[in-house]
Image (tube, rainbow, N blue to C red):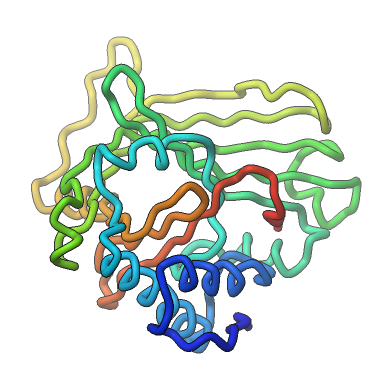
Length: 260
């Protein structure tokens, strides 16, 4: 269960609302919000952080906040999107199955904005429950989904209207799998493939139909509703259930972040 402090929502500043939110998520055993009670509690606090930031003129903007977004790595610390995460949820509840981290790395290179989504799985010991990872004790392996990123709305109108926040779209263009043999060893690339895969002498696959292509693009589009040097809040596109998945990231600087 999320731990809610006693400060009333809506009565503070963006800083106090942010502090309340970070205290709430710091005690979580897993990043996944799976119950209606947890979801309602988290969304209420996030709504308050966003409202306070908007009232103070601190909504994320591009390129003003490019450095805050692109410096360092971000760790996923809370999300309402749980589809496909069943194994990771089990690992959070039973650490003997292994450890995992979900990170997001942003960077600008030669004028191009890029986003890497990284899932790292580790095997802390030789226990039988973690044998499924196929890793040696102390080893880790990461799957990196590399994306191009495009700023669709720069967020400059968000201080006056909640309908025009910083909006970004990402498109997958490569997949990289890497790993090491034991703790402390250098990580080495195992395989790296462009998406879609391209092979000599083989024509590229046909383009997706217009409607499906638009659906794929929408799935990779999200808004950044709060951003500072240590915390980022993002909301995804509306899904088939009418919900906007919420993701909260903390700066992955090694200070107190859990490894589930």
